[in-house]
Image 1 (spheres, one colour):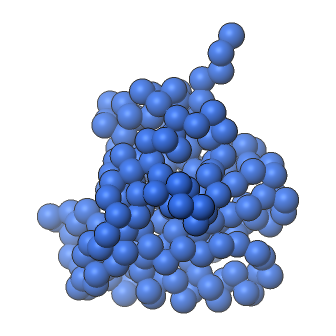
Image 2 (cartoon, one colour):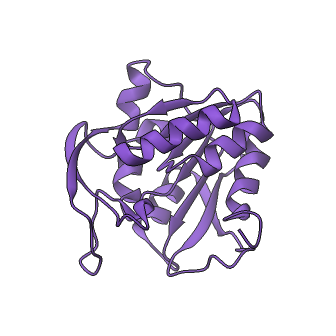
Image 3 (cartoon, helix red, strand yellow):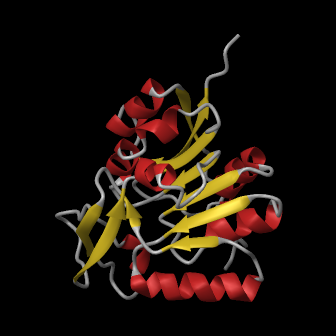
Length: 206
């Protein structure tokens, strides 16, 4: 409210790469980044993945309020296709809902949600393959990426913006193995916490 936006560095990294491409907003919450990216890049296609029923309702209302045509997938992405318990964030912070609950956190309960491998969704023609990905799934990033190995190696995927801890991690190693360079995004607003935002851009052949 004070600074005008939350994590503007994430939105800029997405919009600068998106153009008329396809954005997967994985962990869309109420659509902050996905809807804003669609408004900034109207020729793009945006697919928002959100498994929480509470946030799905807010996402759908936000889509209508902003008058944008985005696709909503009421499921999570993981390294398998099936069902898995989702630990629900507290009423004051539902964005903390996760498939990988932290031992030190308190949750409002669980619900069973559908999970998909990203590769399966593309192979079945259910969603278009992404050219840009935003990934913020509260500790389940590695499993989500493991389920889209073909997507990650596709030359059409140029950019992945993701949340992770600092230093060397399995998430960054997996992205580098798929042909990306990772760098930290500098936070602009007073949104700093224990994790950072990063951008991974595909290495270009000389």
